[in-house]
Image (cartoon, rainbow, N blue to C red; front, side, top):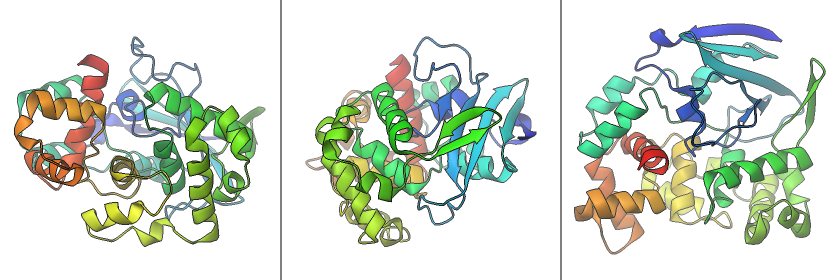
Length: 307
């Protein structure tokens, strides 16, 4: 394993690793101590987190015969890593470490709720996940707490993912679309997916066959991209927005989940409209448009953990 570190002070706006990896936007990371998503955990990211990446992710499609293991923690002002490759560029990409957070929030109108969220979680960053794991995670998110979603993705990796042995330890990659397309619905249900099992299996088939892929979505105007995402099975407006924001770089996307709808009712009632699209559009304008997804992520995490 190679090792390295990135000074957090060099990152514009800093970094809160724990908030970034445990804020319900990514489910590809595991913790060595098994305490991910424990609301009373005060460790602040000093625990080791790890993930297994396909050797080629540039097209946001998952799948390669080669895999890299990346482990990371935040300690003593450093983002420390251990990996089977040079992890610096991977972490910059995955955690959006080159995003200028002060500049982003200068473009986002401030209000008391968002100010509280920013103060509580300075350095929380929107992630840049591979497309397929993100898609599956949010198909599984319907009516589920984040800890349960995380558990489902862990189970899928252990059951169907490629095993990668490093330094006497076995890690599991997230399954390829082909592996999940070949899974039986009953087995997926056994892993806790419930009624979401056929949605995951069919969406995996669409990606595996090339019938619908990330390439059919990326590059479209935002609202057209949200519509195009719904060619995948089990994907409605909210899931589409999550994948657009956390995997395809649409930082203007504002997923309207239960917590954000609560925020609309309690803090932004003037944004309530008759449809998802219209309410999302109004809240997006409230949050300044271009980087509204950043504001959404802070508000979501703050309300879920401290609201």
